[in-house]
Length: 67
Image (cartoon, rainbow, N blue to C red; front, side, top):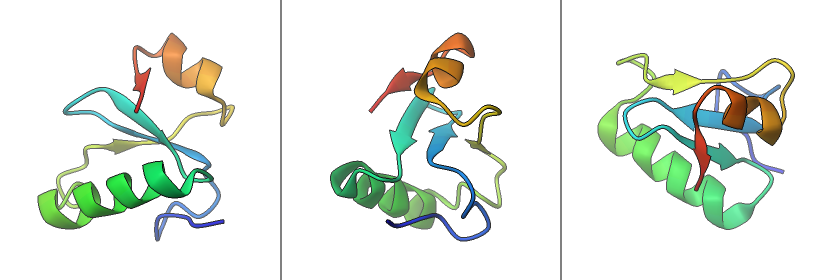
């Protein structure tokens, strides 16, 4: 189970510039997310979002769509 550094407690992580949510427990989605975070410096630009509760349904409620 991979997690984004500084967001280890979150399974679902959203990217605000595309309004896409990624499941960190899915290896394919996690690799896409990790590449975006590194290449686009999303953490420094504050374009990453987590959810409470940490569910896909909550991400959808906030307007994010699955990757």
